[in-house]
Image (cartoon, one colour):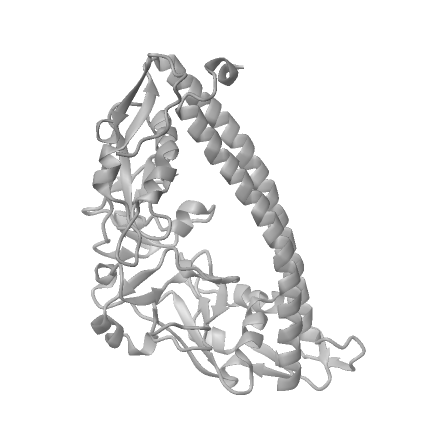
Length: 425
C-alpha cells in the first residue's frame, strides 16, 4: 500500500496511521430541487460548484438543503469525480455537489488535517481511475498510511508554518494573476477598437447615431442582433432537474463552463440520450455562440467549434446562432468587446437576480462590416491573441512553478523533512 515517504532521520515520536482513522468522508448528492436566490429565506443554500469554490464571486445556484451534505466556511472538501479528482480544497458555506465529498476530522483538528490531506494529494491523484471520468478510489484513500508527530506542539508548528508560508506563496500567485488580468484588459481594448473601427485608421467615418458607440467606418452598418442571427434562445432545465445529471453521456453546458477563453470541461455534467431528445430546442450546433444570461458570470461568452457529438445548454445559457451576414468569431469578438459588455450592463433585468432576456439581447446593436473585413479582423485578432497567449503562458508557467513549490513545501513539512526549529523561527 502506498504511503507518504517517511525519511529515515525521523525520530521515534513520529508514527503512521491509516487515513480511515484520521477522517471520515461524506459524498455529496445531486440536489432535490434548484432554487432561485430569492428563495434562500425558505431554506435554500448555495450549491458548491467549482466556479464558486475557486472564485471570489457570489453563488449563482441555490438548492434545497433537504438531504444534502452541508459545509461551513473552512471545512475540507475532496473533489471525488472529474479531471481534478483527488484534490483537497477549503469549503464555503453551502451544499456539497455530487462530485465532491466532505472530509470530517476524527483524530486531528481541522487545520492540521487539511495540511495532511494536501500532503497525500499527489499520491491519491495517481490512483484516480474510472471509465472515462477519473474518480477517487475510496478504499485506497481509507488505507493510505500517513506520518504524524506524537507531539501536539510539533503538529501546531507544522500548521502555523504552512499557514504562513502558503499565504506568502499565494500572495505571489495573486500578483501574477493581476498581471494576467491587465493583459486581458489590454487585449479587450484591442478587440473593442477592431470591431467598431476596423483595421484601417484612415478609413472615413460616420456617426453611428448611438452615443455610447460614437463614429464607425462610413461603409459599415449598424444592425439589431436579431436581424443578423438565425436563433436566440436558451436551454431549459432537464426533465427531472438536477437529478437527471449523469457522470457520462451527452454534455450539458452550464454557465460555469462558458468562459471568454474557451469552454471548460472540468465541471461538466451529462444527460442521457432520452433527456437530450426532450431538450430539442437546447441542442448546440457547431458555430453557435453561447452566452451566459443569468448570475455573476452574465455576458461571458464563447463559440462552439470542434464539437464532438451532440450537446445541450441549460436555462442559464443562451444560444446565439449567426446567419450568413455575420461570422461566428466576429460575433463572439463583438459580444465580448467593451461595446458588447456595455449593452449587457444596460440590458440586465430581473428581481433579486440579474438576467438577460431574449428581447433585450435581440435588440443589441452590432456593427457589421463586409464579410471580407470581418475575416481580416478575425485573423488580426487571432494573431494578436496568439502573441498575447505566449506572454500569458509565460506568466501561467511562473504561477504553476509557484504552485509546485507550494505543494513540495507542504509534503516536506508534513513528513518531517523540515526541522521544527526552522519552522518555529
